[in-house]
Image (tube, rainbow, N blue to C red; front, side):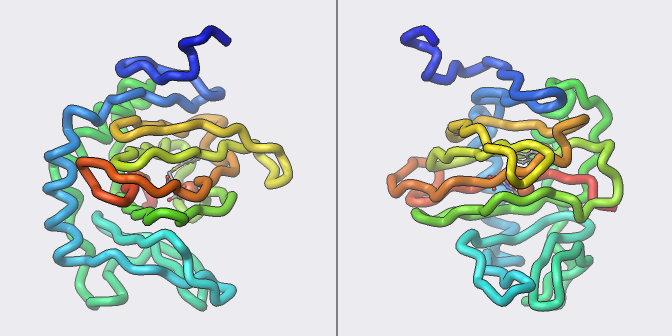
Amino acid sequence: MSLFEEFSQPGATEPLADGAVVLRGFAAPATARLMEALRSITEAAPFRHMMTPGGLRMSVEMTNCGRVGWISDRSGYRYAPSDPETGQPWPAIPPAFLDLAQRAAAAAGFAGFEPDVCLINRYRPGAKLSLHQDKDEQDFRAPIVSVSLGLPAVFLFGGMKRSDKPRRIRVESGDVAVWGGPSRLAYHGVAPVVDGAHPATGRSRINLTFRKAL
Ligand code: MD3
Ligand code: FE
């Protein structure tokens, strides 16, 4: 590795695996628009800690926008058309979110991506996401588009078995990752977020994951 390769280059397209790519800084120009749209979503559907089916409180706080939203509680994981906290339908995916997700998918080779849900994760310092697969969706031909905002994080990108040793991929605010094709069902997670401050988000990391669930 050269002295410089450990720094990510804005505009770079980094292939991670077959069907998986990181678009460095792709969302950076849209940061203010995305954060403004996020504020109206969380006014209607506030962040909350969900409960795993095993009864553990997740360290990540979540909310959703779209036709359905991903939820977890004592009875399991699923997509639900309304927010269990308010009884209301989830807010619609804002145009700024949809535009960014569709442009990123196309740049990664997945033209025509039509997400119907955006799961929004907030990581306060110390929050993490254990290794898992995203398999609650109906159609695995569509990719997942993941937008990182605020504090940096380390993605854990594993293989098709939980026991495959994950690679560590550092992501920064504005980076967009697209996971499709043979990588769609890879195990993945997020290492505990390190404390710090970011002008866009304060002491937190926000991740938007766009999916086609239905
Ligand atoms: C998908 N969120 O919400 S996707 C999730 O940073 C989730 O909050 C991550 O995993 C986060 O389910 C962003 C990161 C990711 C990494 C590798 C993958 C998603 C992947 C490999 C295959 C499919
Ligand atoms: Fe995931």
